[in-house]
Image 1 (tube, rainbow, N blue to C red):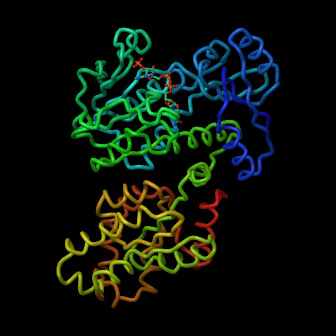
Image 2 (image 1 turned 90 degrees about the vertical axis):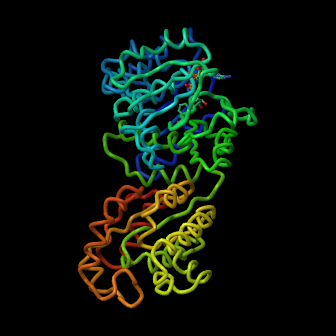
Image 3 (image 1 turned 60 degrees about the vertical axis):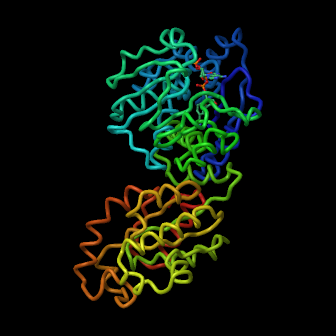
Length: 436
Ligand code: NAP
């Protein structure tokens, strides 16, 4: 498969590296080059492409809109956004897609930022903002405020009447982001201008979360200010990798496993990621975690063991009441989340507190080991599981109460049937970007 990235200037593109990894991990032979083309050369280049020079192409600044007239069909997302970043050639026909849309969705999902019924503040009115607006609108956002340095110019570029959700355009002087999730689609704060931020720390008051599409640096000033104020903050690295993996799914004509996106993100990140195991008590997290730590040469932390070491045995802690135990568990979860290259085995109830999970997801891939209740019941040691205490039916009740949360917080769900070795192998494969 012969692919390229079309742009005007492409000095530091990460795309060749990302796509090389996808080729290796999916076993698809291919090349991914860079095509720096001047505006005068664009028309000739598109004709060469159509004639068969490449099988597919990514498109970046400033040509995402200019390539549209060459398309034989557009995906609904590309049509709504008015920009194409991925083209597939079939014979002499060109199909245009916008996978920034999917990448943005993957980023929100991975950090549990709900769109439905949510309120958003989008900074900047450029190309990336249009993908973000389309995604938020399609997924049921309640209200969006678009912040631009120049409202009149922004209104010329973005027709807010096309969205179902109300979109209000304002200037920075009127900004009030209380109770909204802020999405930074401006380049402010990007390397080398790392001390710049589009907002003052004061302006962040009351904000629910910050999503910065910038990925270099990995923690922008805007993100750091948010973190200092205890606000969830995520960067755009996962969006970058997810849009690339989605583009490959389109070119290769098959779904490509989500574990690969995480694997590539970990390869690009300066921080070594954690592998976080969640699941019911007795699903094998601790044993599987130990095996994974050895096999993948990663450190190991078991949050229940860490709690026991620091505060005493868990059945005794539970006697003081579950809230007291959960508070201690959160302290341990927050500390553990800051580690790197560590397999983190969690207690079954860790998912009861969303903050635990947002912290663990910051630098971790969360894997749910979904072992059926019957299988757990056959091998569980009831003495060490205070919430189960001799009652088989309580496990079923717990499962019913928690399954939605396990699924919500899992980046990957691994079917937990089979031997410990088999489940361990499936997780190791996903972690290393191979198909499960
Ligand atoms: P763009 O089309 O140039 O738009 C950026 C917008 O930001 C501009 O239209 C402008 O909006 C605003 N802006 C520009 N300079 C500014 C400044 N100095 N102060 C305040 N606002 C400013 O660029 P883009 O393609 O949308 O990309 C924007 C950012 O998103 C870049 O950092 C890019 O790397 C990132 N991005 C990341 C991903 C990812 O996968 N993570 C994908 C796409 C883009 P107003 O003039 O209306 O204020």
